[in-house]
Image (cartoon, rainbow, N blue to C red; front, side, top):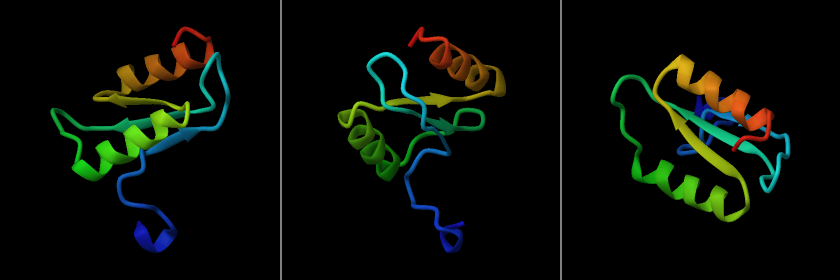
Length: 75
């Protein structure tokens, strides 16, 4: 993935659509009880400091809910 331009620690999905106080949504997808790496935590902190909403989803339903809530302005 790095050869394709991916950066280590950057969340999996980016929705570059502004809503409410946020510039965009970054969504990290985790399977089961997966945990965040220190690099992921640093990226998430930096993105939040730049007025982006950052979220972690542990299932498809949770990711879907976050995306819908963001787009409808509930987050």
